[in-house]
Amino acid sequence: MQTYQVLIIGSGFGGQCAAVNLLKEGINDFLLLERRDFFGGTWCQNTYPGAAVDVPSALYSLSFAGYRWTQMFAAQDELHRYTQHVIEQFGLRDKVRLNSNVEAIEWDDDARRWAVHIGQETLYAQFLINATGPLSQPVIPHFAGRERFKGKSFHTNHWDHSYDYRGKRVAIVGSGASAAQVIPAIAPEVEQLHVFQRTPHWVLPRADRTFGRFQRWLLGQKPAYKLLRWLIYWQFETRVIAFKYSRPAIHLVQRHALKFIRRQVPDPELRRKLTPDYDIGCKRVIVSSTFYPTLARKNVTLYSREQGINSIDERGINTQDGQHIDLDLIVWSTGYDATDGVISYPVTGKHGTRLSEVWAEYPRAYLGTSLPDFPNLFIVTGPNTGIGHTSALFIIESQMNYILDCIRTVKKQGLGSIEVRPEAERSYTEMIHREMQRTVWKSGGCHSWYQSKSGHVIAMFPGFSFSYYRLTRRLKPADHILS
Image (cartoon, rainbow, N blue to C red):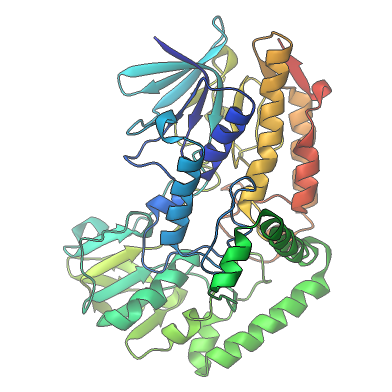
């Protein structure tokens, strides 16, 4: 029987951050479980053409693992290298077990530990950290006849590099953040590109730049790196003022976005299709200086909602307005189950409590991290921990303060478990959704992947990231049951 003090599910930045913090705490008895055959998470999995981060690289990195970035917004290959840099710097490779897909977890009331089921095997741990991430379960909508298509098809999350799309007739279904990166990357090389847009997104220019030798040298100096991180952090933090506290600020940014679309899209009909009818920020804002010009290319056609997909047959797509489009490749850029599917496997807590039942109305958690009746279970990037204006890694590192404080407290007192009190979780959740009413994500006039099926905004934290940091900085013993 294999028993660990801590099991971490997922080996992306959340899992890596948890592992490094455990090592710093002097805890070596842990294991990372990765369902895939490689270590690294999102930026090792998402290898589609054009993949890149939309937060400046110096901020989109772990505070304890600097890097000499080559450009302001790192592309996927450099993010992959950074991931490997973190793994090697902290010796994490020997702490991961690949091809280990967690099928279910359950709390043993008598032994006071978690049982983690992987195929025919069960591992045990006192503490469990779920770090699978919110963008790990791809979603492909059902369209009549989808299975009949005889060409090639795949989701951007599983890009098939063995397929040569050059000179082919290609459809991209979706026009969000991933699609906005894929489209400019492949449009010059395909014969025809058909883009199916359900709802237009607001787009702002991408102020990217390549760093010179001296700038890269500076990034290697800890004081300079730290200064750059904080300068970018505070610049981005001001965006919350628009997202939550100031409608005039939102309208100011929106006017800037409207000027950008007028400048980049001279065709009035195309511009009409691309102009959103909701407040900027309600959906994820796309940062790109190449998306609009690509949609204006002669070999690219944009289909709006009223021209959308009616059905799919062996040869291609039938549209709502009666067209048939012959295709060689359909790329699904249709996002992830990022709210209701935060944890994809069955979770059973104390006295047989099922997480699926607790979350039947909508996912919820104290600090987006812990739940009553689920002792010693911590969810990295859980409900309402997403951040729309800055780096998600800042939130992940803030969560680690709370998680490590919980583990430290249990160990120091020689106890077996810690769980949040129901009234503390309820009070926190009520506060989150009360504050959410004031945000553009709730009242901006759109439906986005930030919202669960219930209509509650689940993906986002409704405030400044430093407010979340303050909430997670110190464990509040009165909010918890220690036993």
